[in-house]
Length: 177
Image 1 (cartoon, rainbow, N blue to C red):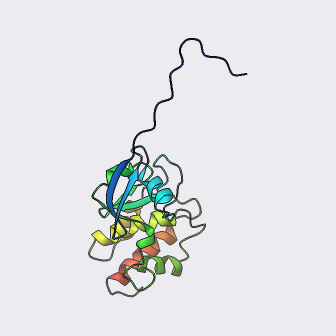
Image 2 (cartoon, helix red, strand yellow):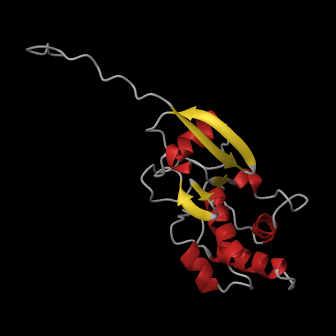
Image 3 (cartoon, rainbow, N blue to C red):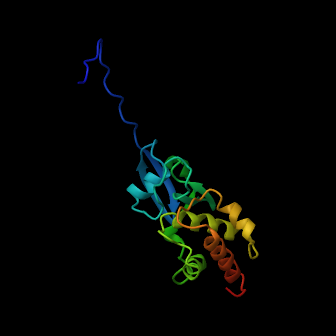
């Protein structure tokens, strides 16, 4: 049974006022009011309806929420939305843009059967894309392992994922896939 508080009762704290966020999401300028305590993941999923980034652990352990902020992979569950002010946010929804369909990473994941349940796949794709955008030659398996160290997959042993990223890298650099 709930107890009655003794002494004066304070009014609940007033919700924080919204802050205007100006950013670019997947190449499109965006201006919207966000609560200062909302994470980038909450802004993307619940205000912009970009649901590719997954809400997993909410502690930064799994990497399912990974997006790119100015080309760098970040955990959207740990990044406040207001920290994206003036930045370029790239989500998995934009991955195939400019490739006439699927991105070479997506094609390689399909060829190698690298996605099992698929929950972790968007975050892994965004981390791998950041790696491939940064390295101007085919990547080596160890580089892929390091780039994906913050992304957990409970379904695979990572071998197919690493093979797919290496394969995509070769395709992107004109080598056989």
